[in-house]
Image 1 (tube, helix red, strand yellow):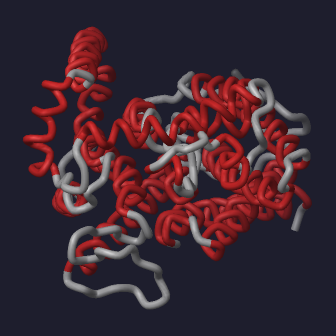
Image 2 (cartoon, rainbow, N blue to C red):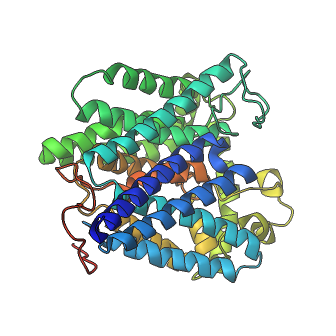
Image 3 (cartoon, helix red, strand yellow):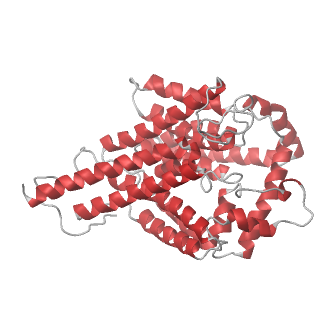
Length: 436
C-alpha cells in the first residue's frame, strides 16, 4: 500500500469521524435538556471540542485547507481567544473556563461543518440530523401532554398540566429552540421538490407550531415568524428585487408593530388577543416592566466594565453587585442570565467581545451559496436578532446555541460532485491553500 493511499484513507476516516461527532453534538445539545444542567453542559463541551480536534487532525492529515470564506473562521478564532482571556482573568476562573468550553464547542462545530460538509451528501447528513433531532424534541413534547415523562429528566412545575417543555427544562427555552426547527421545515419545503419527505416535514412543521402554543413563553410569536421568514429568503434567491421589496415591507411592518406595542392602547390590544397565541401567564405591560428590571443589571455591568466585560460565565455572581437598593419584584430575586443576547455579551465580554462576535456573524453571510442549510441560517438570523432583545437563546442556552450557530456560521455552498476529500489516485497537495 503506497503512502498516498494510507494518507488518503486516514484523512477520509478522520473526516467521517469528525462529521459523526459534530452531528452527535447537534443532537445532544437540545435533547440533553438544552445542555443547561451539569451533565448536558459537560457532554456538549466534550463532544463539540472533540469534533473540533478531529477536524483539525483531518486538516493536518490532508495537508490542505480550502475555504470559500476564511474570514469568519479568522474572527471566530479571535473571538475565542478573547473569550479564553476573559475566562482566565475572571473572578471565578472555573465558571469562566466552563463557558469558554461551551463557546469553543459551539464555534468549533460550526467550523467543522464548514470544513467537512462540502458535498451534497454530507450536507444532507447534517440536515437530517437537525430535522430528526427536532422531530424527537416535538415528539417528547407531545408525549409530555399525555403525562409520559422521561425518567431522570427535571421538569418545571406545571408540566404537563399547564405547559410543555419538550426535552428542555423551561418552556421558553424550548420555544427558543423551535425557532430553528420551524425555519428548517419551511426552508426544506420551499427549496426541494415534493417527495417522500414532504409529508413528514409538514407533520414536523405542524407539531412545532402546535407544541409552541403550549409553552406560554415570550418566543411564541418568534416561532410563528420563523416559519414565514424562509419565504422572504426564498424570494431573494429566485427574484432578488421581489425579496428586497417584501423585506422592506416586512421591516416597516415590524417597526409599526413595535411602535404600536409601546403605546398603552397597543398593549391593551395585544393583551386582549395574547391567549389565542398561548400566552397566559402575564400581560405585556408586566412583561416589559420585568424585562426592564432585569436589563438594568446587564447595563450596569457593561457600564462598569465597558471594554472587557465582567468576565465570561460571571453573570450568576457578578450581577448581584448591581442590585438596586430597596428594589422589590424581579430586581430583588436571583436572575440566572441577562434575558437579552446583546446585554449578556456586553456584560460578560464587553464591547470588544461583542464587536468580534458581530464581525464573525456578518462575515459568515459572505459566499454562503444557496443550499438548504445556508438558507435556513439566513432565515433564523433576523428572528434571533429580534428575540435577542428580550431573551438569551444564543448566549445562555447551549442546546439552542449549537444548532443556531451551526446554521448561521457553518453553512456553505456545496461542491457539485460528491467526491472524497482526498483522492487515492492523486498525491495529496503539499501546502495550505486558503481560497477567498
